[in-house]
Image (cartoon, rainbow, N blue to C red; front, side):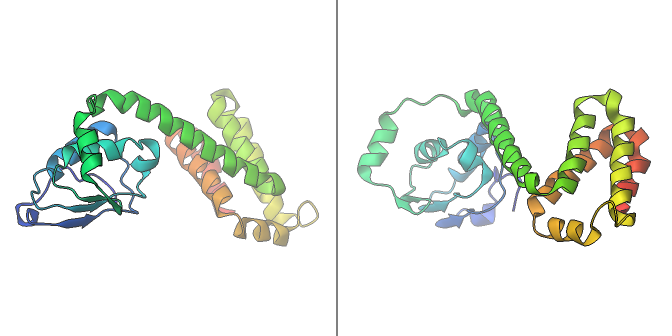
Length: 210
């Protein structure tokens, strides 16, 4: 599940427990503030779980704001809220969550860059995908290389597919079957290039077909 949860249907106002954990909610602090405001209308909500969503990793401070904004909550992410914790939250001065939007974006970029770096490391032992991904990256970095790099990538795909003496075809398919992260990275780049460079569309489609 993804999207936002900044509105509560009238029929749900009597809810005592909500489990939104392990979903794909990627909310900015401002969007979270709206969500907390909406959940605050549930006077009977005592148990809430939101852990495991993307925003939790980027903005771990969310727990403080949920505790402050949901006065009747007695458990958050499986942790009991004691009177001492509640009193501490009430006495803590908090800034508006919207002030954290820029910080959130910076953190998100750092996390994505880190995850991309980890995926690139996976490619080290798989030269065919590494080379193809490297060519895609060159196109994204310098548009002047777009045509030449796409032609090289297409040639590499043809070589892998058609010339057994240039590359072991069975080896290639064995490689990509065991590294879904690398395939995902490569396909994401193809999608971006299709969106940005209409002139490369034919080559890129041929590459996918190979």
